[in-house]
Every structure is written in structure tokens, then in C-alpha cells.
Length: 84
Image (tube, rainbow, N blue to C red; front, side, top):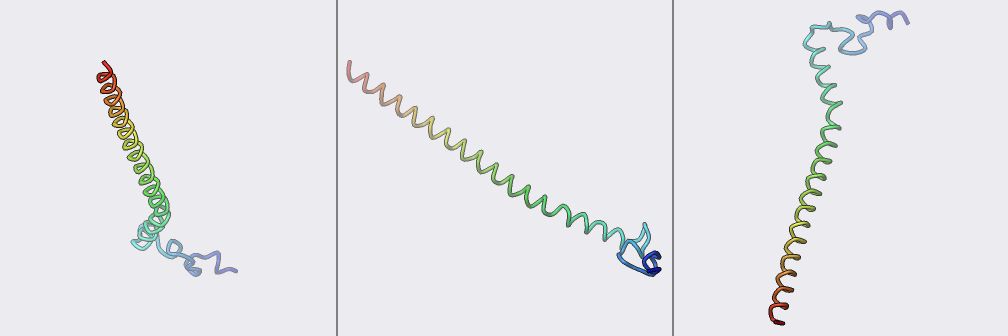
């Protein structure tokens, strides 16, 4: 139990046996940061793609509705013109 109280003896992790300015500690901290950030990056990318796809579909739907309305207006105008 006494070994657990002395970090140099325990060597439980890279932070325990290396110092604050050690390259191994720096690399360990960066790797932990990357591992913590990776799920958020993946989820954010997927969410961004879904939002972008939805916005593109909505814009395409609006253009198609506008084109259909223009075509319908032209058809109605032509029928009214022929009735005169």
C-alpha cells in the first residue's frame, strides 16, 4: 500500500513518472485530447451533412414548386386567352 503513495515507485501512468515538461507527458496529454475530441468531430460531421442535405432538398423542392406554379399560370393564361 505504501507504493501507491509514491508516484516514482507506482508508475501508474505517464504523468506519474515523468515530469510536467517531459515530452512523453506532452504527447500523452495530446493523445487524450484527440481521443476525447474524435467522437464530437464525427458526430458534428454527420449532423452537418444531414443539415446540408435537408437544406438542399428544401431549396430544390421550393424551385420545383415555383416552376410548377409558373407552368400552371401559363396554362391558365393560355386557356383564358383562347376563350376570348
